[in-house]
Length: 202
Image (cartoon, rainbow, N blue to C red; front, side, top):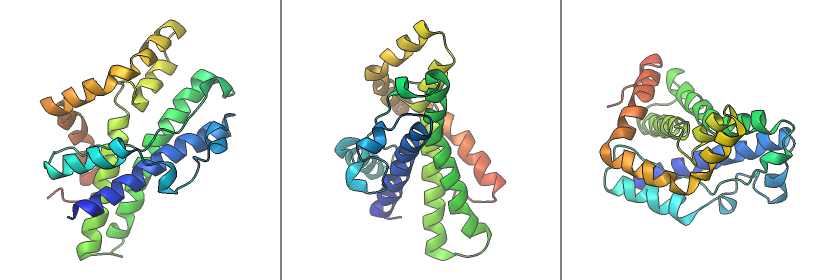
């Protein structure tokens, strides 16, 4: 599968992920993303040179078993939300859930027999990429979405402490990737989904 096709799928999926953070935040009382022009599928508004282009392309070229990437985070002022702690959990969950929804949307044409051959291969890659993005972002390591979901259920003192570790989180992410821990966290979800929908990981 062409690196370019995989990169395009990843960029699109990461953008949808970020846009959904902004959409849910707006529904819950914070229009920061709207005011900054981030509730759009226009990639120019979302591309981060490192997270959207360099990192996933590098991982593809070195044949990493896990392909990671991100769009520029959509700004959310949690203090503006109607219920800040509950809102933080809902806004944070919106991104990963959008990736799981995309995975289901991409698998349906295959199961309905609407595509085959190369088209089916591309959709399987889209399913895989979205499963990895959604599951990866639920890991409770700052600044991933899972850490904000965890923080929303913690006492305020713990919440601020968890969120304060955001600048160090990606060091842990890369360490987990290097040690193969991410593979063991992500693979069970991917395998389960593919079995449920009768897809082959081969």
